[in-house]
Image (cartoon, rainbow over all chains, first blue to last red; front, side, top):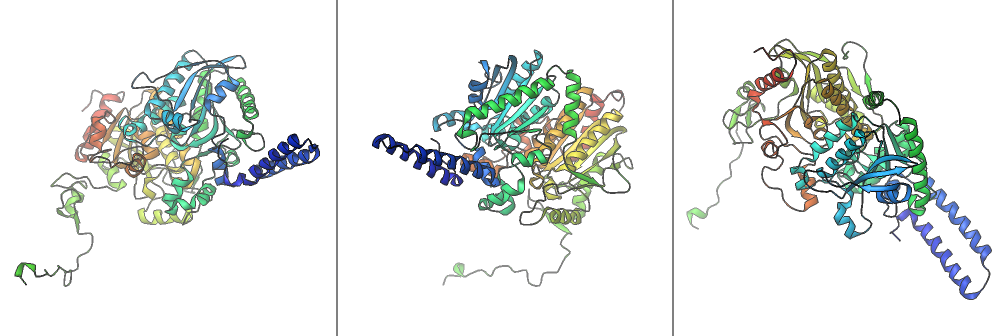
Length: 325
Length: 285
């Protein structure tokens, strides 16, 4: 089992208590079903209460939880007929992003998502889900392939951010992200993005300029990590709690700010406690959103997408002269 | 004690005649002490070594536009504080300080003008305003400049100088990358030219959106241009970066900018590019 976050301590303690009791019951032949039943009910309440009252930094920890389903878990869990497509046709195949054809509820779609590793070995291969430019270029290639055949694009966002390394800069990390933003804005096919874990800045947005933005209940989406923000603005990463709060990066924040179109509910205790339930909820939300926009006139879709993104932000226009036409 | 071992008396500034602090400026490039007025006349470029000093946004507007042709737009747009953000200082306080320091409302100046007679829309970022960071107003003003170009069927020129997205506006500042890129998608589809000029420094969300999307990307000599800042990269790879990494010249060599252009040739270069790309102006010079 994956390591637990500090706020999960009481939950883990009770889980241990329950398993000990079970063991005792089976060994001693004593009937403890009533005690067990009560404990399980208590655990359920504890889990619900804990997860309903997470503070912002705790939400960040849940979003980064190693037990959460990752892109390939969704691919295996809710899609069928998966056919992975690799490489950017320029440099190499970046395994921090995976993509390919898949089927959801009978509909053929292009699925593209960040992919973190389940263990250290896989994380080295997948660079902890931090793409290089070639990852973004592969993603764009697949999106264009989808549009060519009139198939919708589903993106799953889960990354700490684009990789800040030597080769990434050398090969144009900024250009790769920028080009994706522009090209996603004009892609003539329906697009839906689900932030399934960590929505880390430009590296997340490079898969996120879509018709619909869905955010899972315990996922986050932010312009900078709380640690990075604290280091710059508070001059110490120790202030990550304050930074996490200030950044308004939780799903309910994103919904109230009008950036998220929908929050996908997670099972009590978070997606990592019941991945199947979490994936089913995502499948339902994706199917519903896709059927709402699939079949729309592509030109109208793009016009609506432009209007959606061009309206984003908060500003005031002081009274008086000026103002562009 | 040998005479050569006697301690030298350090030079002190005692008795120095007091000069106003801004009469002279030392060049970071060659160490030459420059008479400030001469430096300004030379477009803030060191006459000895060609080092490009940061130039105020207003001077860049003047540099690129025909005299008297610039009409500013959107000057009255001001940042809201959508997140009620406070770090060591509340965001509104930071905004107020920046306004007092720069005399403008935000980190970008936008408008319409002519360059060698050619009409165009212009946006010039001001690094002095919270590090030229991009929040909602910067995004909106760039978007409006783009829409202005669309409406009048002209080209768009953006001069970037920015540390990236403005953290104090959280997710909204991230979304400005999508917003500005969406407007550029429209220009792209209409066949209207966009020239991006990258000045020192251009990093983060601005590089990863409009600054890299020019039909031509021009960079000033020596400008630092990148996605991640050099310190972040060094911390990540646990190595010191080589001299000149992420410089304009490095980006030119790696195919990320079309040309490194000396500021003193910038106007002529932009005008040439617009004559090549902007419909109706190819025959004139």
